[in-house]
Image (cartoon, rainbow, N blue to C red; front, side, top):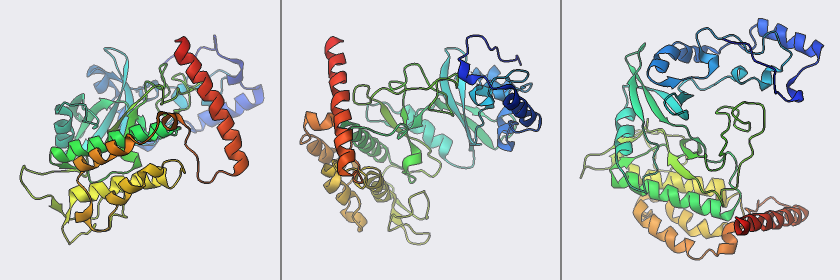
Length: 371
């Protein structure tokens, strides 16, 4: 692997001699070595490249730190960045340069089958991550590699406007109605399992691990505003999901999933998986938005319905879609573009934040008019 070239790099990436010597010693002592979990991907680098997917240089079998022999800070070298998630890693599709994600999954679950099923069904209400390809793991025949579009956590960066929340809630309800309409219960709805295609926010890309930086891991990646550059949200991770035969009961058992606040979860008493999904999504709306922001009170009735203690009182997902459409019609266009107001804001903070929001909206309006 080649040594990093120092040409055309900004001055802030270079270290004073003493600090550079200290980093060189840390490098020799293994500070930047692959983590045990990263060897999984190193061992499959060449296989995946033959399959058409290139992992980052760090996982090349002959990788050597690119900053070796230079005074460049490792923090600004892309190949110093470790991945701490064994089961999923980003890659580049060689044919067109598109960034994708590869997830290692067990063949003993229904994750592959259900992921492929939801990916095969078209429609604008399908907010489930699509599957590009399924590859049998060449070194462990009990596992498969799911190749998917690269997605970013839905709340990184944070939602900023009321309209951001409206779009998110609408898409998630549509996606849940899609799943249930196709006889699938997700059974693990929680913030880590909802992601977004952030390309509209980052037209020049961002680093897949150090997401606040550009792909080169040197410069900052500054997002555009969602209210002017809408994104699509997706459910991911169907490792705990259940696909029911048409006409079959949706009753299940098992205290599974991240949301342990669903009141009926039980390892012994059957409960309706669809109703549990509704509660989990309502709980997510509650904690992520209603409890945090003072100007999304229009969500209150929806969330109250979704979080009824008695499962039979929770409306099905398709009815929730219609309910929210009625709610959305009552939110004015001015409110849609207004910033989210933290409940914890003090009066002086609100004044400052409102002033900044007015200025930012003025600039945004000017850009839209000028084109």
